[in-house]
Structure formats: structure tokens, C-alpha cells
Length: 157
Image (cartoon, rainbow, N blue to C red; front, side, top):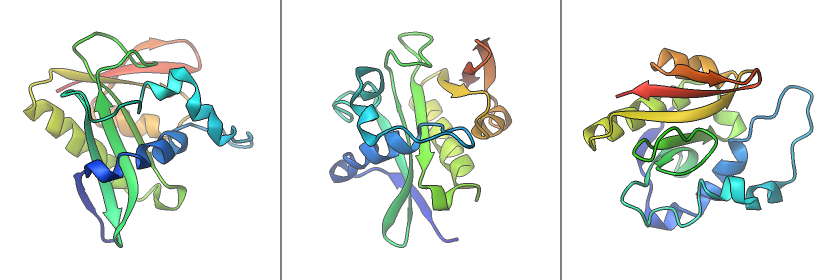
């Protein structure tokens, strides 16, 4: 598949609402939550006023003139928060574009971008049953805490 990774255009920031919903892990056989779940304050922290802080970064994957995935980073008090100077990331792709290596490329490019911006590490939260956990481990993320269901991970840059 031909695709490119690039910085998000300001006009595309509203797409993060869709990608936030797509980032919600739904275990096999579970019913997806209603779309309005992303209006919850615990999730809005990922996208509210995105782009207004100098710590907000977003890369998108684009194919056939359509944004098909996004990875974004910001310093926020989210599920993966570990320190006030360490950004957390979120990543998602539309279902039909998953398991093709695009997420790994997005992740690597975001890690490179954050390193070039002077960050020393990045964190995230992932459910243990999420297949993306292997991608994070391959990228150098290590578990900091594990509550049995969810893991907070950090990657030195």
C-alpha cells in the first residue's frame, strides 16, 4: 500500500476526534462503546484544544488523499501520565488499515520527532490484551506498572 507520513494540517485537527474513538481498545467479542464516550473528560484530555500547546505534536498517515491513521503526543494528565515533562502518546488507524505495518512506521517517526524536539522519553497506557502492546515493546517501550489489565509503558528517546 502506498501511503505517506506527514505532520497534521491545522484544518485536520478535528479528525483526532475520530482517531480517539478508534484508539479505544475493544476486546474480541466485546461491544463497542457509543461514540459519545469520547466526550468524557478522561478522554477529552487527549484532544481538547489540540495544537494550542507547544508540546502538541501529531503525525498522520495518508493514502489516496485520505488520512487513514494518526499518532499524537502531548503533555497531559492522561492514563499514561508519568511526569509533567514527559509527553504521552495516542495512536490509531482505521480498522481496514491495521496490521499492515503503518502503525509501526507512525510510532517510529513520532519517537524520532520527539527526540529531535529534545524530549528524553515518552509514555503511554495500553491494555495487556491489545495486540499493539507487541509493537510498543519492539519500539523500546518498557512496562513501568501493570495492574493486571492495563500497563503504563515508557520509552527512552
